[in-house]
Image: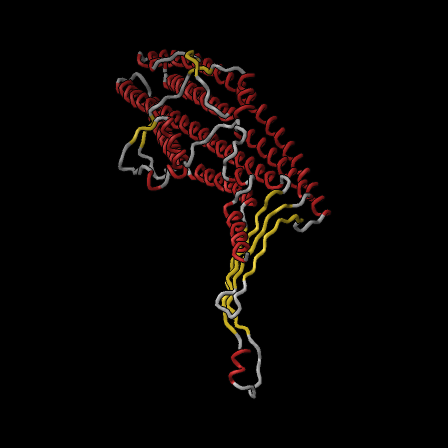
Length: 481
């Protein structure tokens, strides 16, 4: 009978250790959860892009990057993105921590003891042995496991799940922001390249004009003032070229920093700024933003997590039902005593009605706050999408107007150059024509830059890349510039 009693206790302890409760199936992922409507991020990004597996970029190697290359490198190397992945993994671990309430809590120990009686020295030795103390060690093990807590653990686990999904959306939003920074900086580099080319062409033109002014002066057709003016114009053009080259270098350093390879600058960009229209209207853009914008979805998950927290706090008024067992054996002693205990209990852990009531009030206020924040983010997304869409239409029209102004400035410059070569025009007229043409070229490139950056901004506000239409804002060739 004693052996049967001992085996029964050990069986109860094994059952606790293996976690055979129904709720532990949730913790082990054996139950199917509702499908999330959010997009799934690639798994284990931080492991796939570990330092050991990364491509080494050194300035000894020259590379040509497309826009997609820059985005891919940023996702691999940018430390802010990697931090987001680690952060979401930390939130994921909280789901398991919540379900751990349904797994057993085990305690074990080993006690060494010596017990006995005091005796009088006058007692004969053979009597002393019968009353002398004994030495032994007492191993013990006990376990407690929650069976049911009226949904408190599930509510906490559901809250942790929503927080994890929110962290995933925050990761997407961080990637979304960095992609916009990549695109904006990429387009600015292309603009800086165009700016350098404009000033380089201007330097060549002023060098030619200086030679012409010297030739006219030698034949007495023009005053020396034309030479001085041409030298001044050439010096200013060279200064502008130096500044443009510096702007280009700084832009490349910024792009390298965003990509996560700040020391690497020995690369060129392969793509050009786009002039394609986007096949989307304002209402569709807003609809997509409400469905896909990570920041908005994250605010929604935060609201849902607060709702789960409110549910968990309300259920703190309910008790817990659990199973417990313990076993001990006084081994090695004179008295071989085995002890055991099994049972099922219903208990409250530190029940304080006033505290629970206030915690419920706090959770309700937090939930209401997150609902208001969700609406605020939604209104902001709506405003930003409408604003960016309007700016994109304006930027499209600005390209057409800038091209018209460029054509007029180019024709004016052609005429004043011809007049000066024929000896009819003067240096001031020629300078005005050159400056007008130069500014018109820069304005046109700037209009294209603004159009591309605005499109990237709209993509950020929506949360996905926009599909480009085949139709272009305007058709141009190299000769048009």
